[in-house]
Length: 83
Image 1 (spheres, helix red, strand yellow):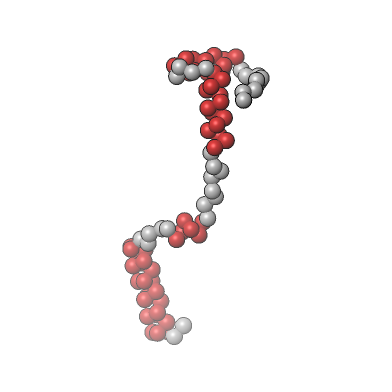
Image 2 (cartoon, one colour):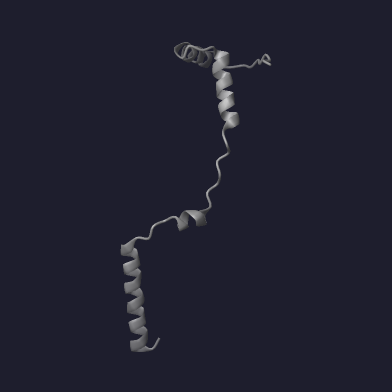
């Protein structure tokens, strides 16, 4: 069942919409109805969990190597100087 829908719109915007409707060979009403269907069907964007994003990261070998070198340096210093 179709119902009448009245709204107020900027005159220049309406003219631009009419041009788009003609190019797509459809009425302005059909264009608006299709747009409304799209936004109603659209699922809300799921917020991304930061921890999930971090879990999906691939480790950078250079950073891991550098971290291991620093750890080895501090362990050597600890053994050498006892701190």
